[in-house]
Image 1: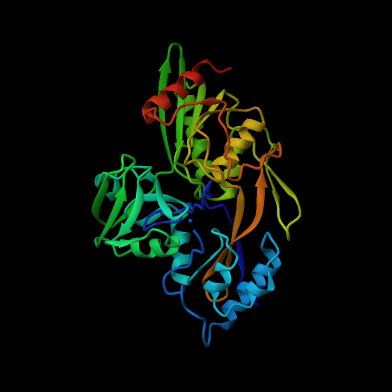
Image 2: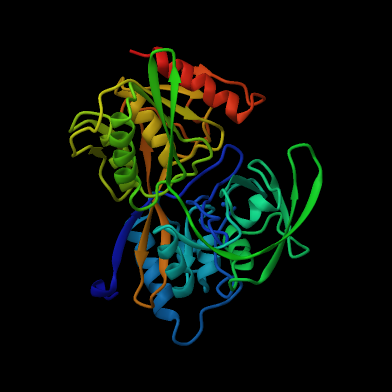
Length: 400
């Protein structure tokens, strides 16, 4: 394998699932992953069901080498002997390990920089179903009436139940201005067919609000996902809200499916002392490693972290680290429960292998996989989003 052509990129996709996997990729816009998040072997259309032929043997060999040297569990020789990339990876039974062809990989790199073409949704996969985790404000999906918690059952009239995430992503993506139709089952059980025009969308990672509660002011920062620049944007938001008089903060991670581990570490660093433990990773080929913050905190003021059942992966790393450090209380619902780490490795053909390299633990050693984080103060799922936020703001206002 040509090491000069290889580039490793740490990447925490979104997910996992209590009853399945989750992937946040970019369904045309973010279906991410983060994505984010997925059954199964996520292989792009054009790669799935294809036996690598002449000229492709090197790609299969490169993938075998990466699995042997970096996969977080032992890989059975029978898996490595599979004749095609799709069958090789499918035999692992790992929903977070998949191949990206050069076009898919280029699209993923654009998406982590906040530029998307699609309909404006982020999804998680639970079992055989794709769950909408978040609808991007102002995008086609929101205008069509889709909501977080809706389940995608068909795209362009074809069922996607049980389909790999990458296949769905490739179908939802398309040229700007073209039409794609999603059929969803709402939380009330209603079946809705929603035709939408694909658009170029710019994801606003951080939005802020300032609320007055008596004599105190609470700054609210909602983080959409942990894409490139998230930590810096949170730091900027803290400074701006502090100038406006914020005496405490709410970090809203609801419907945040995850993203880059480097940004998760940076966000924790915005609130804790330099050198604070963020996460510990353990893998077959990677020694037990502890990651710590390396920046001066932006604020020491009281903090509440607001989470829900769609807060996954990097969101859970941040939430667990802040709570274990005694820096924040968690308010809301039990989180999603995804505790494995992926890495994206660029291959010589311009594509990439996205594969699991380790599992992670919170600073106090808690393995949240399949279990999630239980909040310190629970808010029932039946409570509206606005009411849950108001509850968190009230708690932050009296926090010391």
